[in-house]
Picture 1 (tube, rainbow, N blue to C red):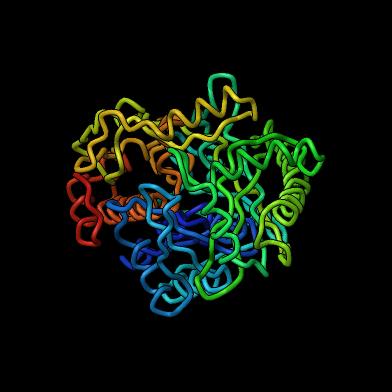
Picture 2: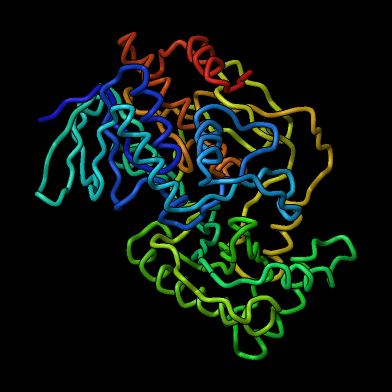
Length: 443
């Protein structure tokens, strides 16, 4: 049985950050991913754009994007529709290659096409993972483990408490992302200019004008007024990444539910392609090149850990002594609705647009304790399934923050292994010093 210092479950952006920074510090690291590629939602989910806070984006993720910009695989674009965020679209294939290079050049051992099907736990520590591989079942062990699966897979197997969605189990609806080529952006942007009056962004006003008509015409099945829409990949090509349509009622906590949602999402993506071709100038010659190989999830399971960072913490710009990351505070969040009814949309919009008592010169922090499960001493959780309420996660589930969360988890694992302590006893001051040295501001 192969033994490691650290095993990271999940090869999304948070898991990659955790694996690479810990390997750079000398740990023997295994990164396990069930799909054929690294990057998670940022590659297989076709969310090929890093959205980051304009003020709080540091360390591993920022260095990765800067490197890709230097190589021509990513770029910074102004996007007035994305308020409060920086927008870094990138080429999907370039990101796949860059992530492959990052793990290989830093000595991270990677197992793709590999699913975790069980674990062995002795008391309060995980000792082995059971993996389903092409060649059959194998077992691996480590001193430390990080759950970066997005679905709390390791935490659930280890007996940690998790919750799904709101108090009724409703989750933020996922989207099937799509790529269109052949878009005439100049014509599209000229059309958008017709809607540039009033308080709402032109894109929103356009959608609110056209979607009800498309439903009445039988082009769209659902009158979904929440429509992030079309984003440019580059100013020099005719390709768009399209974030349109919510698969309302999706059960993202079961295989059967995800299967149905993925099938419904592909059907819906084609409906929106027809919508753009029929109603929106600039899309007459567009071509639907592909949809995501993975449904773009916003929410599934989340862990209830040593501390659940809550919306009051965010709203009041709370500072924790054991902080591992700064993030935008205030009583605002991007929690997509679970249904298409107007009440749910208005609740989303009210929360997303709330600017009362916003202090642009202040920030909230995330405590290290929100990475700590309660019952397992050698396990950390990072990314979309960490210990925070859904309004906080609505804010920090974006890629920019997930990079920083993974970096914090990976550096904590280095201290845990080097100092031979449990994760509860990691010296947080030492962790904060390591993060600061990498450019990540905490307290």
